[in-house]
Amino acid sequence: MIRLYHGSNVDIGKIDLSLCNPNKDFGQGFYLTDIREQAEQMALRRTRIAGQGHPTVSTFEFDESLIDSGCLNVKTFNSPDAEWALFILANRNNSENKPCHRYDIVIGPVADDGVAFQLERYVRNIITLETLTKELTYRKLNRQYFFGTEAAIAKLNKIHDCTTTISY
Image (cartoon, rainbow, N blue to C red; front, side, top):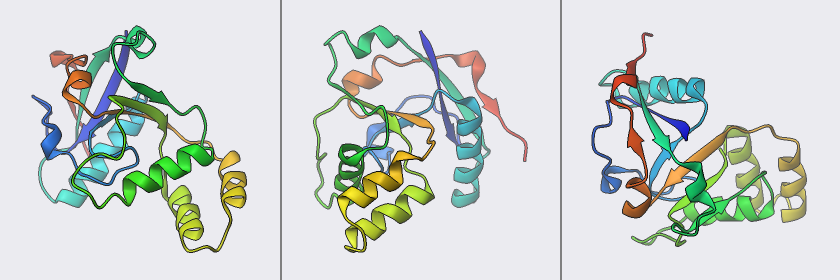
């Protein structure tokens, strides 16, 4: 079992995918990390942006053996490469009201502000895909876990005594 953390401005009781924001790195879904500090920073940021609530980290357990079991459709990006960059661009620029992929779970690097800058340069034809890939090669990025379907959400077990409100 792996512990995964979700940072928000509210405690997450029941996960409702319809409340998740669209056009994120891996699409509309529930995002977690295996780095508690990253979730804490996200909770602070989300609370600041929302202007309400309290920075809260909710903790979940997930059976990692399910990644390779075949019961879920899982995509893993081990590094920020061209395939990862194009996947993120497709999700961030998705103007349709439906997902642009069929994965239950996607695991891979977080596209931070530095990556967003490079992606924008690529979209504007300032750099080539080859240059974009080279620029991404040296980035040390934290990993994120995307749960995008009810089948995937059902595999998350909330640890109720591990929800923490963070002080500013």
